[in-house]
Amino acid sequence: MRSTLLKLADDLQGSYWFLPSIMVLAAIALAAGMIFADTHAVSGWMDGLPWLYAARPNGARQVLSVISSSMITVAGTVFSVTIAAVVYASGQYGPRLLSNFMSDRGNQVTLGTFIATFVYCLLILRTIRSADEAGAQGGFVPNLALLVGVALALCSIAVLIFFIHHVPRQLHINRVVEDVGDRLLAGIGRRYPDFIGAAAPDRAGDDEPPPIPTAFRLDASAADAANRALIAAPSTGYLQVVEDEALMAFAREHDLVLRLQHQPGDFIQEGRTIVEAWPPERYDEASAASVTKAFAVGSRRTALQDLRFLIDELVEIAGRALSPGVNDPFTALTCLDWLGAACSDLARRQLPSPLRMDADGALRVITHPVTFETYMERGFGALAQYCAGDMVAALGFIRALGAVSLGCDDPGRLRLIGDHGERLVDLARPRLAGFNLEQVILRAAQLRAALAEPDYKRRLRDSAAWLGGIG
Image (tube, rainbow, N blue to C red; front, side, top):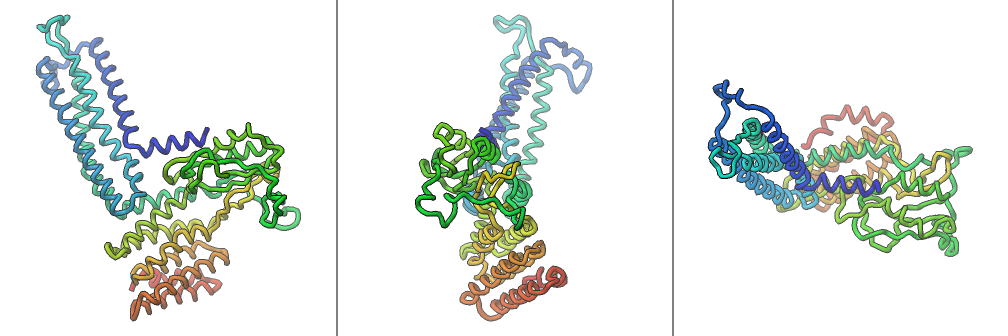
């Protein structure tokens, strides 16, 4: 259930109608409240203020008519500008960034403000009546409500000025990349070291890792591998949310070991296995709903629990920028800077073991393996082919690898960083020549030499001149 609620909340956040709808409902409630206040209060005191005298029916109608007609016209213009911005961003930066612009709070609040003001004025307008109108029980002008309508109009003007400033700022490439990078860094901090249960110990002796059931081992025989229950995916689409606490509680309650076949961001197909349970005799089909409810599936990938999706967005923007039709290496450098910051943050963290235990130390869940190498391949591994053909991007690639190594203490991860530098050089040799190729080879050699020293961090910091340059 929680996974469904998280998916629903993410969908509502990314929708363009939800927040404006809430603001319209608030405007209806405000109109009702102001009419109630006007019917129980005397607005004659407003006549004593020259700049705030009580309006008459015709004047009140004119004011509200002007405000309401203006608001609905501006709301249509705002909607047109937003759609044009979305179309531009989708074509320029990639269709996967479409949800980023649709979920922008500034656009939603702007549209909601104008529509809510229109609805408020429309509801107030219908309550005004003159003393000579047929069936009227005396004239009625809701002066307090009219005053609030004028205040909403002034607020709408301020929101329009904000919107004019917000749209071009929102479309600036550095702002787009910053938004993706900030969400990636926040996701890393939120996801690690938060994970299902407690990590399995990796030391020998008394803290030896718990044994993996024979049915789940790679060397299992056909008979042993068949000794497991298969739980099918509830629907077809992209896995968006996995409710880890529910899976741990279910495994503990039924004394099971669950192995997840997929992680958030993977495409799953209805009827295909999504979870395996052992031993099968402790699992019954009646419990299948409890497991499948822990998964939320949708039509697209989201950044809710999928860090790879955010990395893919940075790679997509950089790859488009380095395409022959665009040829914008400095946008690629911006993506590399944020990617380097994210991988540097990952490099200093202890990523969770796929073996997850409950509070009693019993193995309960086997998750999809997550490694530092996986994220490096997803980011730098995918970008190497694009950066290898441009000297500026290639030097930025090596500089970003140096930034990642500054946050790393693990020798294996350092070797992996050096390997990515060598891979870039191998890809650059047939595509660059002369001075351009020499500079890339020189920088890669400097990085490799620095990483080979015990005090590599000091050497890299002292070499900030070459790390920060592109020439």
